[in-house]
Amino acid sequence: MVLVTIYSRSGCHLCDVALSEIEKFKSEFDFNIEKILIDENLELEKKYGEEVPVILINGKPHDFFRIDKDRFRNAMQKESRQRQ
Image (cartoon, rainbow, N blue to C red; front, side):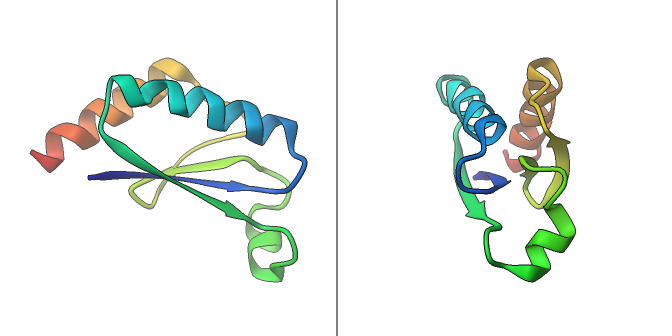
């Protein structure tokens, strides 16, 4: 199964929007969503602090700040085909 990871922080409006947009794709694709808060994690803050939300698909960086819906759909189609 495809795993979409979102690195986020508490109270992040862009993170909430990104999560909402990604959840809309659940009707098209079978995938799990993992939300990881970077708050109070110095390593994650250093790595992702200025770019949240950061979206990974199966551990590979995909987007940050905003979701490009067409690009996300294409990436999900590719990942889904590879899992068959």
